[in-house]
Image 1 (cartoon, rainbow, N blue to C red):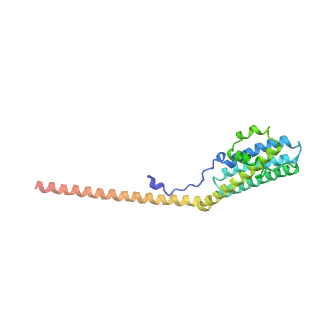
Image 2: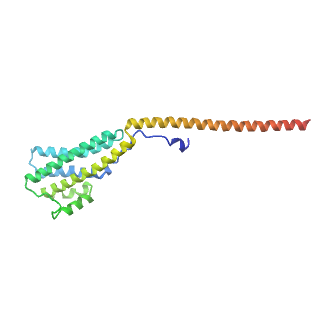
Image 3: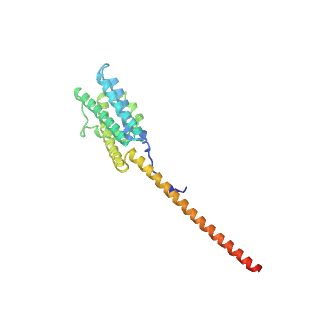
Amino acid sequence: MDDSVNKNEKQVLRKQANWEGLYFYQKSNVLYQLTFSFTKRFLTRGDRTIDQMVQAARSGKQNIVEGSADGVTSTEMELKLLNVARSSIKELKEDYEDYITSRHLERWGQRHVRYDGMLKFCRKHNRIEDYQGYFEKWSDEEMANIALTLCHMVDKMMTTYQKQLEETFIKEGGIKERMTAARLGYRTNQREEIARLKQELEQANRRIAELEAKLTARSEEKGEMAR
């Protein structure tokens, strides 16, 4: 079967996103590890906030992974799980803001002397290896402000990614639509293949008829020569 026969084939399953390569996943992983270290260093053992913050950070990371896996069959489920991830990140952001406020620490705004450096660092670095060496060195104010910046970046990146998924869903539909398209594509291919075989058969029959006509003509010529 030539390539033209496959032109109508449609894929039912979407290709799974490489979630490990997504910058917002990488930053969410940093957030989880940073939060684990932060709560261990600066919150009192037994404080319920520890579990809340660690679970919120973990939920943000894990739901990105689960959403990418479920997205193979359901864009709708992927979007829902990404919304759960975003909600978890926002919850984590609120906890860090509460920590800064309750401890009378400084929230690094645009006018803060370290704001630009922090922003540049967080934009440039995505992987845990870039941050891990600082976890035991940064103060609670430094870690909290880094975490808040990462929370903001992750949320913004995920918003853009979700919009792209929504556009894809509008164009391609969900798995039911893709299954229907695949079935229709298969039937179209079958009809095209049958038509192609019929055409080849007709050409073969015409060729046979031509050869038979030539053989008949030659036989008649030989008969006349014999007489």
